Length: 633
Picture 1 (cartoon, rainbow, N blue to C red):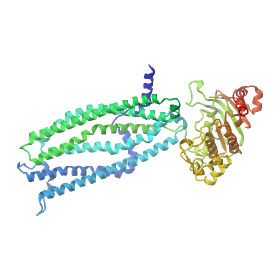
Picture 2: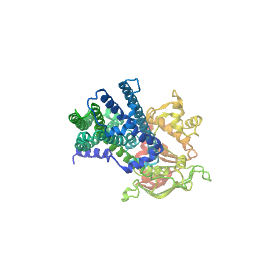
Picture 3: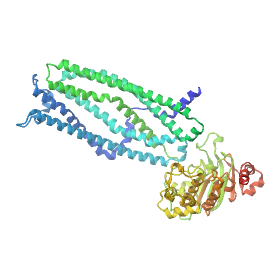
Picture 4: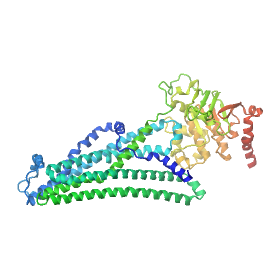
């Protein structure tokens, strides 16, 4: 396989989810009914309006028929079955004494038109409102479910797809209510009603004019499959464009630094042209179907004029032409409505597939909630024979990330985890915060298995500070307090002073109300790190976990960060993963990991005398970092 073919294959796999499925799936509709059921009265109102809408829709044609026959009246017709059927209400068409019949009919026509417009407004409004209300509930459930999924799920599931589930897919399902299944059912009932009216009026003429419907149905069926493929291609190619734009906008710095603008522009132009061509294909099929329907409608008019002239009244001819025009109108939109149904069903299937994904980490029913323990928390951490792999129980021994790891950290003790890249240091911290769970063994906090705590309680007691600090859009205050009611402005200011963050915050024009841009792009790496320290301190955790928290800090900021670190760890149990000597030189104990196992442990001085892995790492990495400030001076 060539490189281009491989790239094309990978791209197809990436957007495989864009394939369209069946246009109707009863199983999915049954599951969607759970979200529609609370609004069943609105659904009942919509269904109840079908018959009144139909009657008001055919009223203008009937009024004009009566008016034409009364004004011209050169052909006398026998009463039809439709006349007999409408006889109980036909008296309303008789003008009151002293009023011109045509003026009366004109008034009735205006009333029926206004009534139809009013009912149509209510019908569309209720349908759209019902769909949006139900989809609000569905979107809420999808978002809440995403928050419950453990971190390993996000390692293998692209963020873009999750965003699509909450936005585009939910909107596609909502569209089914306004212009999909409800519209299809309504159109089908209207077409049957129009056909019934025509047969009641003149069965022979109705049979002749509707002879074009079977061949038209075959043509529409062929167009349906063609349009389906065309719409699928459009969706796949717009998905590629979206992904390409997102990737290149996110990496705009690298695009400009490495002068890739021309290459990017050429690739985008190729994808953009392919998307245009896909649309051209769908437009051709849509136009073809529209033209065929128009031709069929014209043929019916020709049949009516040929068969009915001289035999039927002008009113009957008008009635047939008007109702047949309304009969063929839904067929013009068949491809669009069919595409809406396919897209909605595919979106619903993807949504429920996500909702059916069970969280790998859930609270036990008897888990200890916040404040339920009688003993005062102290922060003792114990790992007992912990084995871990990100893929669960691995088939290959080489896939173990941690192997039989055991250690104990006393309350208020500070330990460091060091080792080469891939040794499993960060995995230890993720297990302690229960972002993942061990495959074998167990982890204890104050003598209690982590799985016996609720996740909410555990993560209030264990605070994690990462190297890549994530700040939310909002204010500095909001990023430190994170919407906790028990953290007020005074507490935020207190912790900011404690970790040395107040120096740059108070220099800002708006202080703690200053805006934080996306991902904290308007602050330096050191400032973001200080804010993360303040956040961890404000939330009152008794165990602090730091994952290379100072590896990206410049030497000028490091003194402030070190002061903040000492304040953060004071009186708390601390586990530190670091590459800087300054972070671990004064810890109580150092654990050295290699290939997922602890190979050495002890103080810095003890490990240096053993001439093992720690000493080699120190000479290769830490000693160089220690000399750098002197060289710079």
